[in-house]
Length: 518
Image (cartoon, rainbow, N blue to C red):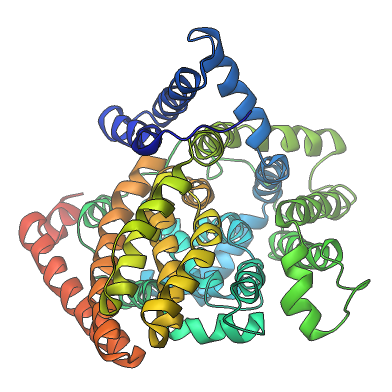
């Protein structure tokens, strides 16, 4: 299918999907409406059959844009989670964790720590951390939207700060292509201090975990969680599941460990680490950059299921028949997430491949006269807008980095690194709060949280960080000093969180009375 350029009309599909999702609370319907609105525009502009073509193009997009490896990974991980719970490993882990982790604060900090440690890939992070931490966070009444927020805020925002990741490899490659840096790693590391949104994301997560400075819808979800309502999505009833009495902590830890190790080795293998450049430099650069993370994660989850078969069946934790029944049952909760992912990829395809949304935004950016001092701020806004509309951060910085680099060098050479970093920061922000972002969807899935609950409760946090980041980028543009921008934006964030939290407490109370009555 050849693309057509329709200008501002290319923004309609994500607008339709997002507005309908907020009104109807039905994500699948809203995404279908968004995709259809895009294919109707495409059919009209391309002169195709107005009745048949929109539906035909929609299904072609769904089939053509899908990352089937990621779909397989979701279903296999669902199976693995079910098997771990059915084996009794999750309950044994919960008993162990209750001895080591003795408070809600410790449980949220451990979730954050795991999210920071599993930095190799955002998809891997989102689903793995959720699977490991749900038993612990449930025990200490952490709401599922809070868990989804912690997962989402330590996936992409962490991956974009660490060079040893699929993100670091990709961005490093783009840096070399711009001609600004001779080394991808040096370019990536030079931008880290200027990536205000990602750094402030991490700061907010730590403050939320330590001081519980929640506000907005998240504060209300946390009040409900204190009364025992975790706001969980429809999920397998693992708590009431009968499990073997001889299960141990290792029945959970070992399969997850196999998943992690095999996935990382598979990423290295697929990227050609051993065949091309078996060195640390090769791992940082071509190996991860050339890898296909979805394929590697599928291999890892499949290996973990095979390992679980050998771990559980010979010990009579479960029978051979029960094991494979569990494989199928574990896939069932992933069906909704899979449908949402397929439609989100499709609406992204409508914007990027059929209607020319990136070209429209890029042309708009190039035609606006931008003073050098506000270049980082403008770049941040443009990147956020494009990422939010298309649901992809990778696609956004892949489009904008080659444009921003020459523009910055022409009008404000001293702000080139800051402008490139603002591109990454804006891409993460838009992706972080877009309901059609795959990482947002997978964070909801990993936490077993209603998707719109996650989006609605995370949005005020993301907007607060973005507002503080904008102030930081204005200061960087004026002073040329990244430290000043980072420090001032961090102070503003702390102040804003305190004020917003106090406002939430004043409006909704502390929940102590309701908890005592319960």
